[in-house]
Image (tube, rainbow, N blue to C red; front, side):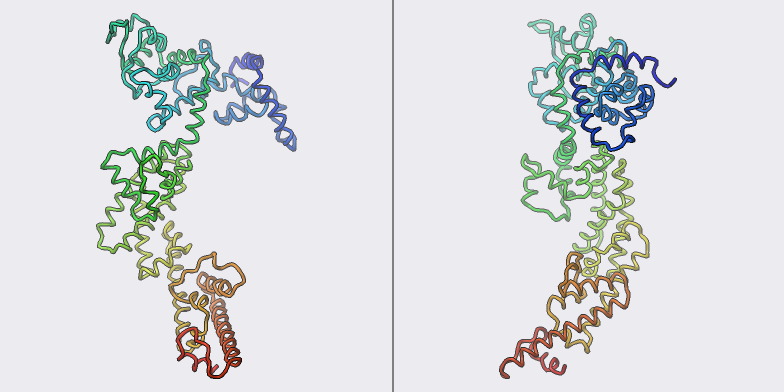
Length: 533
């Protein structure tokens, strides 16, 4: 019990007395949710005393504390205590919460400041907020927003030009202090011009600390309607990744913009109609983000645990690595096809290897470049194993291909070699002299499955058709190497060839002797060979 704040009992009583219609709505929601809870285990918190609840809730983060407060009246009351929110307030904003002199509760102050800080942080890419702050320049923005701006040391706005009374009201700086730093006076009255940082420093000096400046602003905001701020914060929450990605992609200086566009689209398959509107108002930014796995992850908030600032730094470091990789590849004496495939497969390997790391924290350029060099060496090893570009394209969809990229384990490289060797064995058997008749009688859909350069997609292996059955047998042999599956492939091929032969012989017997059906493979000269069987 000693861990609890000494004033927790008073705070609980105060919170209980402050319950309003809002808490009644919360209680109604709680009754609905508790109805769906099937056991007493799920509701055991409601039977604990307030002291124990306080000890439990002290371990929660702010988001969890807010969520648990929406479940019922009891938890709403306890989770709203100042003693719980003071530590979150100080941890987030670096100043202690002035309990005795602040007109606002610690919970409300924390929520409002979190919303303002998040929205203000997006100012450079948030057009809605820019319109609020810049729309009326040279006239000042609305007083509500200036009150929040008082908290910020650095504000990207022109000098503040206001009457002494407004400056004194907003910043709390006495008129005598303002007159000692008088900058400008017009014929219309006492109009002063100050830089934002200058006013911020004056406010801190006047109030005595940053904590008291916060208190001054919160007391001003206590009676204001914050619906507009809440609406802008919801918009920010929904759109922050899109805003920041668009700003990063289209707001680079002109030389860097051309370079980034070139790297972003280099050797990517894309629709020209989508890219033609690059940077325009109607540009499909979501489509552009989908061209790279990392930008697609950022768009969906999957980088750096959803931190948009750290996530966009990771994206920037990734494309810095792409620039270095592209320069290195173009410096090699390779053909266009090899350059493109080395680049694409290296980027794919980098993403596979760093995907989990990027979702947790910032990945620096050096880390990207180190992994890229490692992946490129593995890609080149796979290219040497394939021996030619046709084989290389054929093995790119193998699970062993990607596993070798990620791990570098030579076992997976041996699996790739075995796959190619077994593919060659099937091809060589089909083109032996003693199987000429079968090759000539096979239907095209079966014959193509046995060709060396045919890719077998997993989607084509389903069903009861002859191509699906033969494809499954070939797939099992190629990936397992068991001789039993090879014999099954040969048996099915010969069985299908005999069935085709029997079909043509039946047709030949039903027709006049002068007419012969055309041969499926090899032309008319194949028929004497076929008739022997």
